Length: 71
Image (spheres, rainbow, N blue to C red):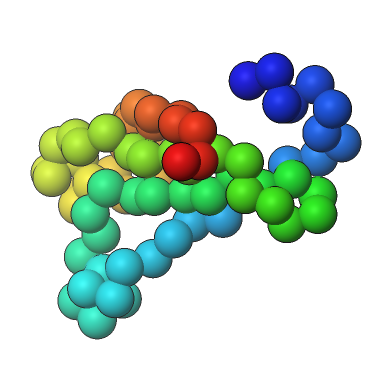
């Protein structure tokens, strides 16, 4: 996380899977965290949770995200 000390801003963008786009059903969300120049710094992956919470609560469901270094 030391790389964040010199970054002026961050952008988080969700990576969509083709299966999700075609079916309309979302799995665990994946994100790319980039600096203001568009350079990828980290990946973020949502931990699997309750299918029922995802189905009924949508964006209001509780969730946890793991942030990992770009390898």
